[in-house]
Amino acid sequence: MTAPWWWSWLLTSLGLLGLWLAGSQKRVGWGIGIATQLLWAVYAIRSQQYGFLVSATAYAMVYGRNFRIARAQREREGK
Image (cartoon, rainbow, N blue to C red):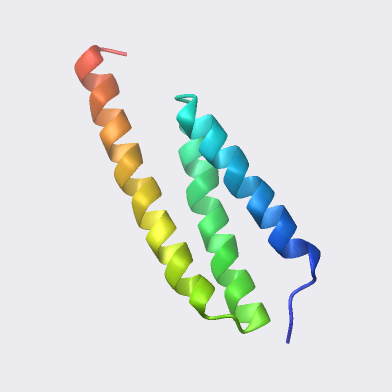
């Protein structure tokens, strides 16, 4: 079973949006980034491209780590 061709474009766009917003210190960016990785996992399974499961897991872990660091920094700064 394959995923529609446009999925990869949609997921790439969502991932870039998440990075942009997170880099602009918008909390929603982290959420979009992590949610997009869940969608990449679905894409990997549907398209039988299981290497994407590894990258989605790694990206989600990095998003989570960076979110925790940003949150701790905001708390230290009193924001």
